Image (cartoon, rainbow, N blue to C red; front, side, top):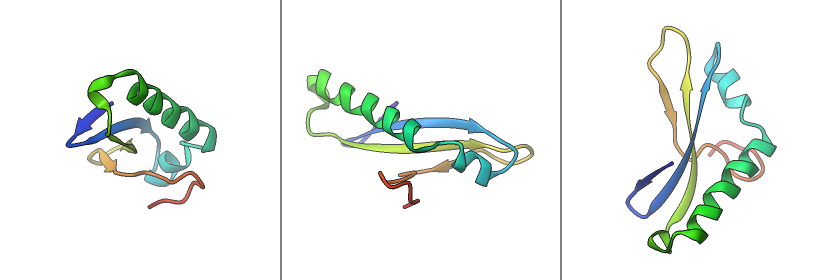
Length: 80
């Protein structure tokens, strides 16, 4: 997790053979768990009141630089 401005970012790191495989590795149930973890932290920490929550991903693919995918998916699983 990280803070940037008034945004709490929950970042998932996936190492896969391709970017497409890494993106596919974060399914609906995992997104729900990540979002729930972030929402719990926002509720429990008074210093985070008023922050927005965002799910990001860091994809690690062999022989490539790490790729940061900001605002990974919405609740329906579509990439933004």
